Image (cartoon, rainbow, N blue to C red; front, side):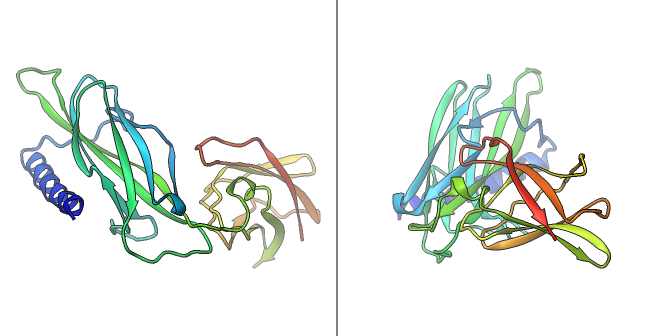
Length: 250
């Protein structure tokens, strides 16, 4: 209970802090690389472990205040998700570190597939370059938090190689369709179609949810019935995998 009270108290304190910065015209958005950095590019929350931890390091020359919270990735606005982060509001001295612990609160999530959320980190620091008029700098960055229930079928590391590809024609347009039958999200780092020695690189690669399909428009009609598909995905460590080769047919 004390932890929950501290969490909501922190939210109120930061709200007034940010209001003060905005009201006096010193709230700025710097490069996202400034200030504290998280130890992971994405966070995997395994349900059987009941919590997930990560490290926040402040390698900058300034102390800073930090607020951390989790929101629903699927919502249009900043909807609070069924997770809390401890501590939720804290100060990190220059060249220091802080361990963050994410815990799930009551709330039902699918048990047959992953769910994804955003872990948000807001950093407020003082820029002392101008000693006569030091400014306050605020920045917010976020990483994806994957909630992984117990006893999911298959393994996340195999999800990319198990994707099914096919070519379809709709309204006179050729499309590449990918089906993800696994219980895991798949994030593409690149995706190419090779036809008659021509390479078509596809863009706007949105994350592919579990148990779903996604179509990608092709720039031209294909004069063949089968193409090679080459792609790589992002693994649990946020690293791009080696190229995976597959085929797609009409």
